[in-house]
Length: 404
Ligand SMILES: Cc1ncc(COP(=O)(O)O)c(C=O)c1O
Image (cartoon, rainbow, N blue to C red; front, side):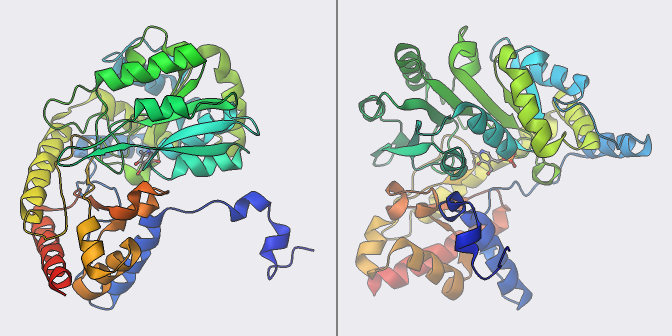
């Protein structure tokens, strides 16, 4: 019998080891406060505030009106796989047969990690990192091994190549590289990307690459895609998606790229999990990639303006060390000084900001290990007026707490 009151006994033990996404938990808290009339500014969830561009919505409506509402091929409609292959040609050669369309990048991460990780394998994950990789690694029976990233005052985070090499054992199966990087806003440049690929070649590792923020680059970043290596097929399992670039978070559309020989096996897993991605969302995806990119470019320019404004305002906050992000849409300032002065830990600080100052930021510990304990993540994918209002609230809180 499945007694509901004893979940610890009835569930797979791994279910007690995984965590959910803090951003979604806080989203619920913000909605609750707003329903009580509180004017909360949310810098929580990583979701562009722009609407999905009109021509993309029109393509979905057209597909609906034409009755394109059934199951599709699990790998995705041929037109979309071709459009993805064309898009990725800006980086390297990817055939449509090397693409699997998924229900968001998250599902691509799930399928990719589950397909390659074996029980007992170790997966290297830079710390801090987007939380999902380690959770899915655990589900696969593998062990996440966190490797602290390097922090340089004023300049932010980068990969610590020596630390990564030092943690490789005979159980290491691969390494996760998310670039541009959530939550730090870092962009790992050509040298770092080449160094990781060289380690993968030397030690025969898989690089699980997540480039979902590949269009969110501010200034000269030296970004290099892992698909630009001629031998990517020997080492790279690649994830990207539509949520961020085209402001399509709710459409649930992403993709996985891997060498052609493994695709049939990946599809057997994919069909068992989700059958196929939403049919009319796939038609919209074709329009997103092949249609007019002006709205995307405008959105990214606007995000860069917001980052600068946010940075400027935070200069006034004692105990908060902000630095300009190079990519994605997150600022990840160090708040160590403020924590030390106030005696709060980062969770308490975040709660204080939310409940006493009506502004939500995420605790760095959501990402999901140790390095983040002195940091908070601020998503600037929200309007300029909210940025000004919310950042001023952070400044006020910092002054109050710093002065005691
Ligand atoms: C690094 C990273 N990968 C993947 C995802 C998930 O994207 P999707 O909405 O396509 O599932 C996110 C979303 O926040 C992300 O930040």
